[in-house]
Length: 198
Length: 198
DNA sequence: ATAATAATATTAACATTGTTAATCTAATTA
DNA sequence: TAATTAGATTAACAATGTTAATATTATTAT
Image (tube, rainbow over all chains, first blue to last red; front, side):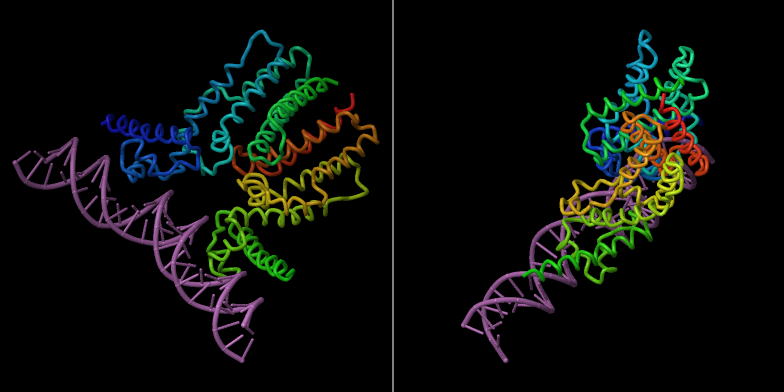
């Protein structure tokens, strides 16, 4: 009976889609078992036949929503542009995406989701943002902008620069405005890549 | 009637202390109005005579707990040590403090606390960790390790490196162990300060 | 010192929440 | 068509933050 599995997956999807909608419209705090049930067209308790608990459902949402994020980011790829500039553009796009979608940041980086179900990890083979950055840094090596040995550190420092700024911005721990922060990101990447080779 | 104010402050302190204890013992999720009331020796609703709501109480705790953090950090200051090394030691200490006190990280950087009461902001004149880092970087300038113009960027990049690693470590978004991360911090600061001057 | 008043603390109550157990309904199988 | 199973629903629980009504204590006025 493979139909069983198909049906089960379909049911799960109803709840996941409902949850995604709610998250998008009302944020994570707006996500409740009752609302998910209602929107999916089932009773509130039915969820528990398909998901361990609410955070399990949330976890499925994360992996689904991650795709949106990637798509947004990749729209900024531009073959013609110099690779350092491409890294800057992409990092700023990454920042802007989360600045515009704070709940995605919350979900992807902050929410306590326990361990991810392995089912989800296995399916997550798409090209990650980290991977994109690495490819571009390798291009920088070819163009003699940075040293091959520094790729690792630079990748980490650039990622840190952006993530930490997102953290402070979205959690209102500093009071800089968006343009200011984007400038800082630009400056720092420029600093890292220009001074890298020496 | 200035006694009124004194008494009010005292009452507030009872609740703040109770809340701090609970946070230390059971984490932020363990903090409830009922528990605070019980531990402070009052009914659960009395809190609302002294604080707008639970998050207001939490905010007071943050500022109180911040002091603990500073003390811990400053214990690592060592006049004899080279300034680059001092920055590394201090950054690692900072990381370790939050690694050992994840709830402090949650409170200080992640929790949604709304705007801080101005009363608290005004009293917060203690030397911040950021300030300490800046002083040490200025020392590095004097020793010709870095350029004066780069202080800003370097301060930001070092802070970002540590904060972002804390974020990923504490929220289990990567799976590196503590020693590994501390090594990375060391490497990155070393990279930033060694390559800074060129 | 006692009565009136104001300040403060407590209890009761409400609306929400996640989650579980008991019950009902629809589908499958014999 | 009857028996069984799977699935969905309702009812219920305990915990939470918060508010309104009530009780208590402290202050003030007579």
